[in-house]
Image (cartoon, rainbow over all chains, first blue to last red):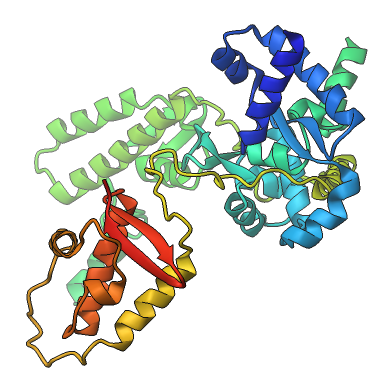
Length: 179
Length: 250
């Protein structure tokens, strides 16, 4: 039965062109999310042992991808366009990822330079999107990261981001120590 | 002119113009002198009006007006102007004052130091993950078949086979006749009807189905209708030799 579940999960992940969440899989299969997660663990182990594919937990779901050792041959076959992000785009992306939602002006204050172009470029790449408007004069647009951001940077969720000691965190630590 | 000069000289002490107020004498603990002098001191802020009671002065003014056998309106007006000015000043000085809070400094003028260095670790991590992710390949999004598209069969006929057949059809087409710009447009439905009428249950080639004479635009219109019928499953396609053949689907 467990073997059958693993096969079914593998079939579903094979046809999925986006990360499939445990919730959606459980809903389709009439199972609990725990059962699906358990099945995914078994599938991951099975794929790890043999074959060219592996199961990854990415962007809030599960997805199949090729193993690292096949990267070169697959790249030669697909000839993907590599468009790595520049340092400026990575800066803006990191700031938004940690402090979202935030306005372009707030990003400017952190970087010390204008970031309009970078924000636009990230929106075009679907790494950042409008998530609302701030309740302040002019109602500026608030930006946040997308599922595409998680997918492109191999993250399961935003908790995968490394802890960063920002000024705000330092200030709160000082307050706590003082009290 | 001489008369005006004499008038000006007679009223030289006036601070309101050439006409001086009447010679009302003011005597208070903090000021003693004429009404004109008091007005001048107040105007130049050399005396605090709060120390000088104005009510007795106004009363004296009215007494003066009533007592004067012949009222000089100019003098009376000058006195009234001086008194009105001083009352206004005094009223203003005794009103309670609030200290206006200082406006907060403009944030634009005091930009904080950039703190992007705090994100260096995160940026390095993102760069590294970007590299790692480049070594993984996923199924391309949106690459699957359209769930709403009815599957159609081309048998063993490939698209290049169809394209070659269409090229041959076009090669036999007659040149387009010169027509008016507003020529009637034929719909695809009309074309499909024409194709269905031409089709039989026996497989036939394009050349056998569409007989000359026909123009290039008619050939295109006819071929598009044929493709649409194939997509809808109303026409079956098969390959005889190198030539695709078409028949009505059962």
